[in-house]
Length: 223
Length: 251
Image 1 (cartoon, chains in turn yellow, purple):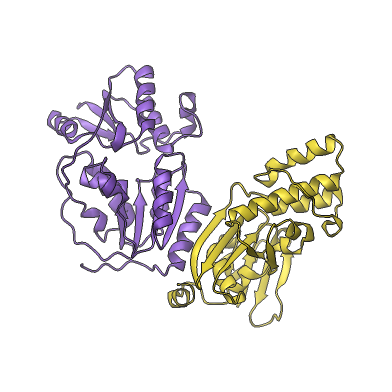
Image 2: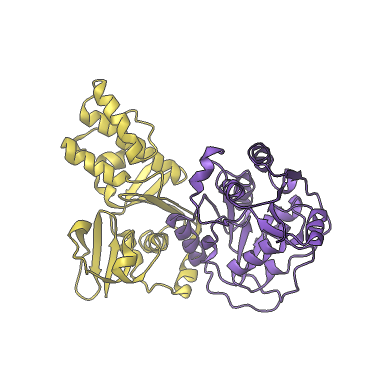
């Protein structure tokens, strides 16, 4: 069975009969007729025979991967952010910001490519820009560069602003489990003012491993 | 051809009785009546404003109406009071502000029935135009709750099972007591409940407050139309709360 997390920029795939590890393919390289058996993510509806809600996949994936009764799991994607908060092993809160978090991961990647920035080499700045989303935050970068900041310094402040926004959106927890491609961005991870546990980019895929639309499964594990 | 009268909110029963006696055609201006861009309302109202009241203005500008009753005050909202003032200035027909403080409860059987949630909502909003109670319906055991006002975009109601009970101002509408804050604040802590308010509506405060006190709640707001993220949040909340399709049992 082919499982897929069809993100905006990258598709994460796992064939339950053939793969031992998930695979990542840039979304732009997927053939037009590519279809998964079960999919989640922004492009799942047109590419899957069966779809699972992204928040549901995140909650189920987090529940499988995190062996704690209380946790907050934040997924930072290319275009949106979403979180689930579990208390006593039950889902207590959730949120999905597809508007003000728009294009955040995508913008961070674009900045790295355009300015040729290695985020692993950029120190965490002491202050950041106040940005609500990737697109609106670009003006702050351009203004800072025009005022004499280096491009990497300006980009770092932008990344810090995005991370702080995401942190507040998730309820400002003391400990945050992080999901998504930005787990691999040391600058982004370092900008959170709390303990961060990066889980990588396959949490939603993990959430697909149980059969969808299985209320027993859900109610037993999450409620 | 009968007169065509627009209403906004829930005008007092005395007004509805009078309109029924006159055998006029009542048009609910809170609901989209025309396939027009809501941006047309920008000429008179801010773009960042309650989508229901922007719809009222859009309807009022483009429908042939003989007069309009706008309920303002505790049974509706201050924004309606201000929109009534705008309508009085820009229209050539009478715009009459009313203050519904009716207290006689007519019951809310539709809210607790096993009808599909969209149909419940349609019947309740239509019921505002008559002065009789809703026909009795068999109550079902609730598995989910929807608290709030009738949304501008009813598609937000699609994910809910038939066994969803309605609470909040919509229940007050069916009860014909729109200013009954106690009834509006009532909800059922035993069932997962979505607390909904239109974006930029004063009722967002009550929705957020009640959701925070409810043990299984999701608070959402939505503007002109239901975004994919709002729909997905509701779907995930219901699914993760163990709410499944709605069989309806008496009770």
